[in-house]
Length: 422
Image (tube, rainbow, N blue to C red; front, side):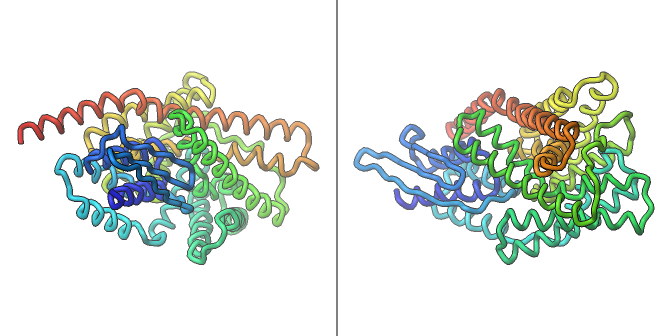
C-alpha cells in the first residue's frame, strides 16, 4: 500500500509541477487509484498550492503521506501524457511497476531547459499579440526580437536558480529596453506597440485561468494562492517595465489603444502566430500546435467581430470568443483523445488582457507623481482586466464542468463493456 500511495503522490507532483488545475490533479489521482484497486471512497486527497496530502483507508489501517512541490511551471505535454497513462492503466490493468516506470520516463522527457526554438517562439508569440493590437509588420519583428532577447535572459537566469520574481523583473526590463531602442534603428509607423507587447511572454495566463478554475471547483485556498502568485508575477513584470521606462525617460503609455477599430486579415495571422507561440512556450504536444493556432484565430476573430461589428464591450466580446473556443475544445477532446485544457489554455491566452493589468500597476507604482485622470484610467484598466480574466476563465471552465461528467460516464461505460467482453 505504501508503494501505491507514493506512486499516486508522484503522479500528483508531476501534474502540479506541470501547471495542472487542482480538479485535474484530483481526477487523475482518483482514476489511478481505481486502477490500483483502491476504491475511490477510501481515498482522501487534500491539495494546496505547494503540498499534496493523501490518506487511504483499508479494513486494517489508515495510511497518510505528504509530498511537497515548490516548483511550478507549465508543460502541457506532461499533462496530456499523464491523462492518457491513467486511462491506459484502467483499461489494461497496468502493473504498479509498469505505471511507475512510465511516470519516471515522462519525468525524464520533461526535464530539459528551454530550447533555442522555444525562445524564438516566445518572441513570435509577443509579435503575434502585437499584430493583434494593430502594429505594422516592422513593429512585429521588433517585438519578436526584443521578446526573444528577454526570454533568453530569463532562461539563463533560470539555469542559475535565481529568484523567480527577480528573474521576471530582469527579463521584463531587458525586453522593454530593446523594444524602446530598436525603433531608433528600424523605421516603423507604430513604435509604441513593441513596448507594450514585448513582455507578454511572461504573462501568467495559465495561473490566472486555473485560479478561477480552482475557485469554481471549490479549491478555495489553492485558487487564492495561485491568484496571488499570478498577481506577484505581473507586479514583477510591471516593475521591470517601469524601470526601463524611467531609464529611457519614456512618458506614460496608458493611453495607447489596444482595441481594434476595424477587422483585418493581419489580425487573424497575428492570432495564429500568437496561439502557436503560446503552445510552444507551454510545451503543448507538437501535433496539436496547428490546432491551437486555429483556436487562437477562432477566439480572437470572434472577439473582434463582437467588438467591431456589434459594438460589444471588451469583457462580453472576450466571454463570447472564449466560450466558442471552450465548446469546440470539448469536441476536440473526443477527436484527439487529449484533455480539453491542452487546447483551450494556449488559444485563450491570446485574449489575456496583460496590458490592462500592468497599466493599473504602473499607475499605482507612480501614484505620487501621476495625474488624477491617468490614475483613474489605470484603475479602470485594472477593473476591466479583472473582469476579462474572469470572463476567459469562466468561458474555458464552464463547458468542462457541464460536459465532463457526461463524457466521463460514457467513457467509463465503454471501458466497462470492453472488460465485460474480455
